[in-house]
Amino acid sequence: MAMRKTEDEVFPNAAGIDIGASSHWVAVPRHAANDPVREFGAMTDDLNAMANWLLACGVDAVASESTGVYWIPVYEVLESRGL
Image 1 (cartoon, rainbow, N blue to C red):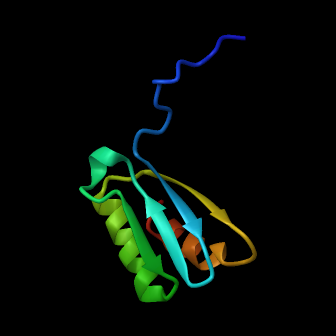
Image 2: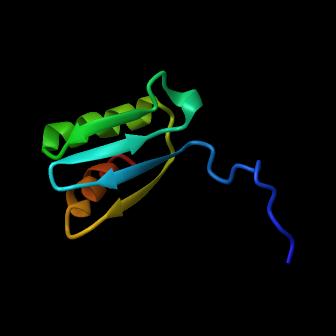
């Protein structure tokens, strides 16, 4: 099987989210923002701010990590925004 080169970017505009009970840490590509890692709260206004920031950064794919059911509100907001 052919090996993929380590410098090949599969999803160059993807973000990663570490989802928690009270806050979510979000990372976007370095080229997308001056400060590519931000913390957002877990309330609806915070989730909307997170979605706005992701869209402003040009993100088109999101990967997340969560324990429990904390991912559900994040998923619903991001999915409604096309992320």
